[in-house]
Length: 304
Image (tube, rainbow, N blue to C red):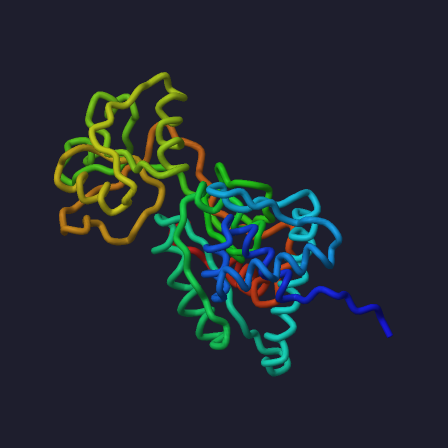
């Protein structure tokens, strides 16, 4: 008979919850038990391990010891495997079952999410798709920990070193009010707009990318407004309050309020920005996640 460890998966799950939450109270709320029960579980696990796994400091929360970090690192795949075991028991042969948490950069959501939620969802009705819109910096650590299974992002400034596949690529364009004289041309030079008011999409990495386009030509744009909302940029441009630099190209030629806008290529051409699907390089993805990645790669993206 194989050796059976003295610790339980539940104890490991509680330790991982504490590592992620940083405090006993928050971790207890996450796993829906009392703080005293969680503390007792950690003490039992320390005793079984023969060494402290956590350090608790009043007003400073809980941190892991080196032994605790080692246990958490190895506990994560064990817990993931145990969840997959239970999910697999509920599935018919060849059927995909279980949750997938999809991270998505906000401006990509209108392009990427509809075919995933509709087409992939219809093909695999027992897969629960959960959406988490997040900028690249907000995804940091969430892919590696398994909190987010797969994410759709721009190819720049992705935290960590995840696995990735290129889906499509688009160059940035200048967005103008439809009645702007520059909108009558085939393309727009950045030199022609640099002295105008820029409505900056201020969400990483979009803001850095936009500013880098000007910097590459020795230009400094005049920023009038900053907003983290893609539609707010389009609306302000539609009202004639400035121009925008955007990547995504919606089919609707009008702003949220109905003001017509025009998308114009930048001259000389700028390098395209890649849109990638990424997933963990340290956690072996379950079959349903692999199927979602394969499905995303098979789509002929209308924005590409």
